Amino acid sequence: MEPVVTVGRIRIHAARLTAEVRRRAVPRLVRCGALVERAAKESMQGGGTAGAPSPPGTPPNVQTGVLRASIAHAATGVGTVVVGPTEWTGKVHEFGGRNHPERPFMRPALKDCVTRFPGEFRGLA
Image (tube, rainbow, N blue to C red):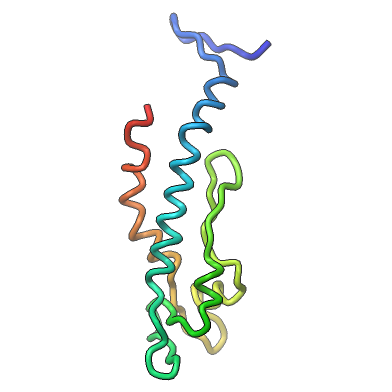
């Protein structure tokens, strides 16, 4: 028998409530991840003259397209979506490294998209 919590005259079936929240909220959360993925990919520009690197502090220019193609999003559990590159150079571009300036692309993408997240969940209740 599933646990039931009673609050006043309201009976809450915990397992059913959790399942319904997952069913309705997780797809919206995944759409938020897709927004961030798209923004990160769109922030990367063509390499310009002979594949020139972007200025420090700006998203990396596309050289081969491998980094941009590696950016993806996925639901990993209840209420969790991970967005980011699978290519190892993503970390170096995002945070910088020895002899390599920061060229963030994921943090600015998240910052640009975060105001759109509430709209994805509007009407859920």
